Amino acid sequence: MQLAPEFALDIHAQLTQQANEGMLNDQQLALVILANLLQDTRQTESWIHFDNCAFPDGIEYIAGQWDLIREIGDPYSTESLGAFGQLLHTVQDFYAHSNWIELHTNQSPIPVWDLVLSSLPPEIVSGTWFIGHPKRCAAGAPTHAQLNKDSADSAEGSKIVPSGPNQGKSLFQLAFNTALAATKVQFAHLRAIPVAAGILKGTGKALVEGASQLELLQAFIESMHAIKH
Image 1 (tube, rainbow, N blue to C red):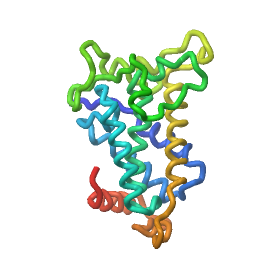
Image 2: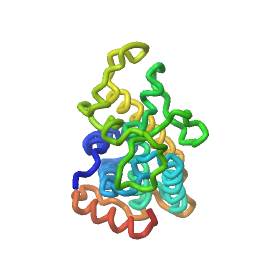
Image 3: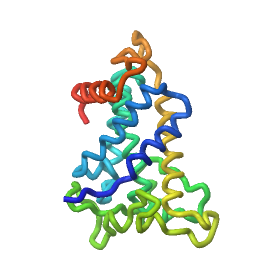
């Protein structure tokens, strides 16, 4: 069975790395990126990728991950960074999997969605994916293959805006730039969370300087056993 294309793995990594802007150290950033990339193993959960018009579900998922981070009390712990990487994937996929970009090509820069359901335009839709649940799109919605802007050479992503303030730019380029701006908003939220009283920064499950990718993966898996998705 062929899996649905997502924002290419290196694109998710690029978005996260560029938005970091020196906030997290190399080991912390590597864990966030790893948690982000592993979300593409969860192909059947529409809310993870804003597929199948699962907009209320995606909003709830992102809010739940933030609740976990605040509950943990240390935004720089392994558990918190894992949850942060997971929610970033969902935030980033919104711009590649919905028609938000197409609906805003007359604005530059394209606005970042505030993750409030009532602020979505009536025409909003995301691509349908047959193994994903829940399915919330009305009949006739475009498929994921028809709508996604996951890469510069996808059918939709390669389209060029013919006129207006974004004239000459591809839909993929606009999706990338807007997802990057949205990712920076999430990093700002993380930066603003205070470390709970009595907790030393980064000591929930501290990342070891120079940890290998295998050690980061093991730390991430262990942390995910401790929190609910």
